[in-house]
Picture 1 (tube, one colour):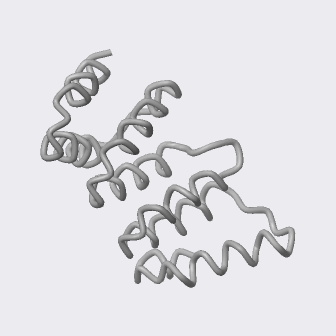
Picture 2 (tube, one colour; picture 1 turned 180 degrees about the vertical axis):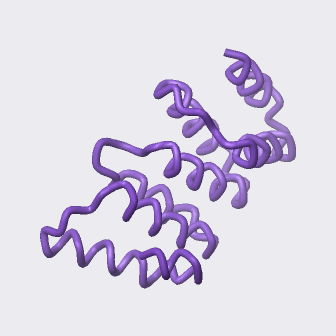
Picture 3 (cartoon, one colour; picture 1 turned 90 degrees about the vertical axis):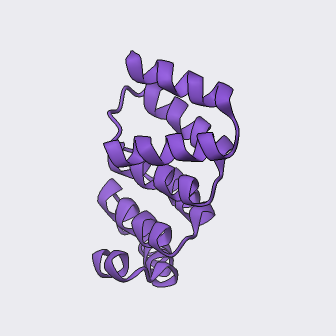
Length: 124
């Protein structure tokens, strides 16, 4: 899965993850994050979110960062807000790059109220 991540071979990453699941191989956050990252690099933001749901125990910081970056790249501002809220509820520290991507997405989409909310969330 890591090789798929580095080459943005998102179709292969999803196939591998699905095969692992069908063969009852334990899929952990590392596997899901690598597959999600391959999808993000392949500009498949909806697949990234799908994989996020497969992560046992829910998404971790890496998974949320990858998901936020994918949504930001796709200008999917509503999903960005949902993911930001999830990160806040779980008290996860977002990377500077992820925060910048989220801010840019909210700003360019004209959703200033969501941008203000995010700014306030960052203060807490």
